[in-house]
Length: 156
Image (tube, rainbow, N blue to C red; front, side, top):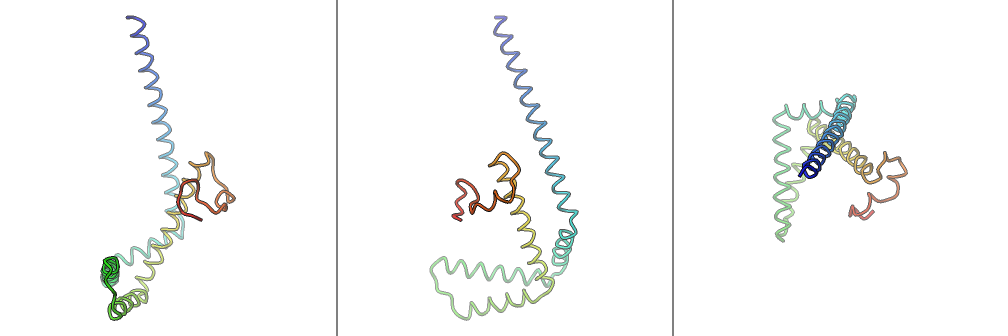
Protein backbone atom coordinates (compact mmCIF):
# COMPACT_ATOMS: atom_id res chain seq x y z
CA UNK A 1 0.00 0.00 0.00
CA UNK A 2 2.96 2.34 0.62
CA UNK A 3 3.86 2.32 -3.09
CA UNK A 4 0.32 3.32 -4.08
CA UNK A 5 0.26 6.19 -1.60
CA UNK A 6 3.63 7.39 -2.89
CA UNK A 7 2.43 7.24 -6.52
CA UNK A 8 -0.74 9.17 -5.61
CA UNK A 9 1.32 11.78 -3.78
CA UNK A 10 3.67 12.14 -6.75
CA UNK A 11 0.70 12.48 -9.13
CA UNK A 12 -0.78 15.21 -6.90
CA UNK A 13 2.59 17.00 -6.84
CA UNK A 14 2.85 16.82 -10.64
CA UNK A 15 -0.72 18.12 -11.02
CA UNK A 16 0.08 21.01 -8.65
CA UNK A 17 3.19 21.87 -10.67
CA UNK A 18 1.19 21.82 -13.93
CA UNK A 19 -1.54 24.01 -12.40
CA UNK A 20 1.08 26.47 -11.10
CA UNK A 21 2.80 26.59 -14.51
CA UNK A 22 -0.56 27.16 -16.18
CA UNK A 23 -1.34 29.98 -13.74
CA UNK A 24 2.07 31.58 -14.27
CA UNK A 25 1.70 31.37 -18.06
CA UNK A 26 -1.86 32.69 -17.89
CA UNK A 27 -0.76 35.54 -15.62
CA UNK A 28 2.12 36.43 -17.97
CA UNK A 29 -0.16 36.40 -21.02
CA UNK A 30 -2.79 38.44 -19.19
CA UNK A 31 -0.14 40.97 -18.15
CA UNK A 32 1.21 41.31 -21.70
CA UNK A 33 -2.34 41.61 -23.04
CA UNK A 34 -3.01 44.43 -20.58
CA UNK A 35 0.22 46.11 -21.71
CA UNK A 36 -0.93 45.87 -25.34
CA UNK A 37 -4.30 47.36 -24.39
CA UNK A 38 -2.56 50.20 -22.56
CA UNK A 39 -0.35 50.87 -25.59
CA UNK A 40 -3.42 51.05 -27.82
CA UNK A 41 -5.25 53.40 -25.44
CA UNK A 42 -2.21 55.69 -25.22
CA UNK A 43 -2.00 56.21 -28.99
CA UNK A 44 -3.03 59.75 -29.97
CA UNK A 45 -5.02 58.32 -32.88
CA UNK A 46 -7.01 56.14 -30.52
CA UNK A 47 -7.65 59.07 -28.21
CA UNK A 48 -9.02 61.02 -31.18
CA UNK A 49 -11.26 58.12 -32.18
CA UNK A 50 -12.51 57.83 -28.63
CA UNK A 51 -13.36 61.54 -28.57
CA UNK A 52 -15.43 61.09 -31.74
CA UNK A 53 -17.32 58.20 -30.15
CA UNK A 54 -17.89 60.19 -26.94
CA UNK A 55 -19.14 63.22 -28.91
CA UNK A 56 -21.64 60.99 -30.70
CA UNK A 57 -22.81 59.35 -27.48
CA UNK A 58 -23.41 62.79 -25.96
CA UNK A 59 -25.51 63.97 -28.93
CA UNK A 60 -29.11 62.74 -28.72
CA UNK A 61 -30.08 63.92 -32.22
CA UNK A 62 -27.18 62.04 -33.83
CA UNK A 63 -27.94 58.90 -31.83
CA UNK A 64 -31.62 59.03 -32.80
CA UNK A 65 -30.77 59.48 -36.48
CA UNK A 66 -28.34 56.56 -36.29
CA UNK A 67 -30.96 54.37 -34.60
CA UNK A 68 -33.53 55.30 -37.25
CA UNK A 69 -31.17 54.31 -40.07
CA UNK A 70 -30.29 51.04 -38.33
CA UNK A 71 -33.95 50.16 -37.78
CA UNK A 72 -34.98 51.06 -41.35
CA UNK A 73 -32.03 49.10 -42.74
CA UNK A 74 -32.90 46.06 -40.65
CA UNK A 75 -36.56 46.26 -41.73
CA UNK A 76 -35.57 46.40 -45.40
CA UNK A 77 -33.13 43.53 -44.98
CA UNK A 78 -35.73 41.41 -43.18
CA UNK A 79 -38.31 42.12 -45.88
CA UNK A 80 -35.78 41.19 -48.56
CA UNK A 81 -34.85 37.96 -46.77
CA UNK A 82 -38.52 37.01 -46.68
CA UNK A 83 -38.57 37.32 -50.46
CA UNK A 84 -40.72 40.43 -50.46
CA UNK A 85 -39.88 43.11 -53.03
CA UNK A 86 -38.63 46.49 -51.86
CA UNK A 87 -40.45 49.48 -53.25
CA UNK A 88 -38.59 52.43 -54.71
CA UNK A 89 -40.22 54.63 -52.06
CA UNK A 90 -38.87 52.43 -49.24
CA UNK A 91 -35.38 52.47 -50.70
CA UNK A 92 -35.52 56.23 -51.33
CA UNK A 93 -36.68 56.87 -47.75
CA UNK A 94 -33.84 54.75 -46.36
CA UNK A 95 -31.31 56.52 -48.61
CA UNK A 96 -32.65 59.92 -47.47
CA UNK A 97 -32.20 59.00 -43.80
CA UNK A 98 -28.78 57.55 -44.46
CA UNK A 99 -27.69 60.71 -46.31
CA UNK A 100 -28.89 62.81 -43.37
CA UNK A 101 -26.90 60.63 -41.01
CA UNK A 102 -23.70 60.72 -43.04
CA UNK A 103 -23.93 64.50 -43.52
CA UNK A 104 -24.03 65.01 -39.73
CA UNK A 105 -20.36 65.63 -38.76
CA UNK A 106 -20.82 64.07 -35.32
CA UNK A 107 -22.42 60.93 -36.73
CA UNK A 108 -19.89 60.80 -39.58
CA UNK A 109 -17.07 61.03 -37.02
CA UNK A 110 -18.64 58.20 -35.05
CA UNK A 111 -19.02 55.99 -38.13
CA UNK A 112 -15.42 56.66 -39.18
CA UNK A 113 -14.14 56.03 -35.64
CA UNK A 114 -16.13 52.81 -35.42
CA UNK A 115 -14.60 51.62 -38.69
CA UNK A 116 -11.05 52.49 -37.60
CA UNK A 117 -11.48 50.76 -34.23
CA UNK A 118 -12.75 47.69 -36.04
CA UNK A 119 -9.60 47.70 -38.21
CA UNK A 120 -7.39 47.82 -35.10
CA UNK A 121 -9.35 44.99 -33.51
CA UNK A 122 -9.09 42.94 -36.70
CA UNK A 123 -5.35 43.57 -37.00
CA UNK A 124 -4.65 42.56 -33.40
CA UNK A 125 -6.76 39.44 -33.88
CA UNK A 126 -4.91 38.50 -37.05
CA UNK A 127 -1.53 38.89 -35.36
CA UNK A 128 -2.58 36.77 -32.38
CA UNK A 129 -4.12 34.10 -34.61
CA UNK A 130 -1.06 33.98 -36.86
CA UNK A 131 1.22 33.77 -33.81
CA UNK A 132 -0.71 30.80 -32.45
CA UNK A 133 -0.72 29.19 -35.90
CA UNK A 134 3.01 29.65 -36.53
CA UNK A 135 4.33 29.33 -32.99
CA UNK A 136 6.31 32.56 -33.44
CA UNK A 137 5.74 36.25 -33.98
CA UNK A 138 4.65 36.69 -37.59
CA UNK A 139 6.37 39.01 -40.05
CA UNK A 140 4.92 40.84 -43.06
CA UNK A 141 5.62 37.90 -45.38
CA UNK A 142 3.44 35.66 -43.23
CA UNK A 143 0.42 37.82 -44.07
CA UNK A 144 1.12 38.28 -47.77
CA UNK A 145 0.56 34.63 -48.69
CA UNK A 146 -3.02 35.43 -49.69
CA UNK A 147 -4.60 33.25 -47.03
CA UNK A 148 -5.47 33.66 -43.39
CA UNK A 149 -4.26 30.15 -42.66
CA UNK A 150 -5.34 26.55 -42.87
CA UNK A 151 -9.08 26.14 -42.57
CA UNK A 152 -9.94 29.83 -42.23
CA UNK A 153 -12.55 29.62 -44.98
CA UNK A 154 -11.87 33.11 -46.32
CA UNK A 155 -11.06 31.80 -49.82
CA UNK A 156 -8.41 34.43 -50.63
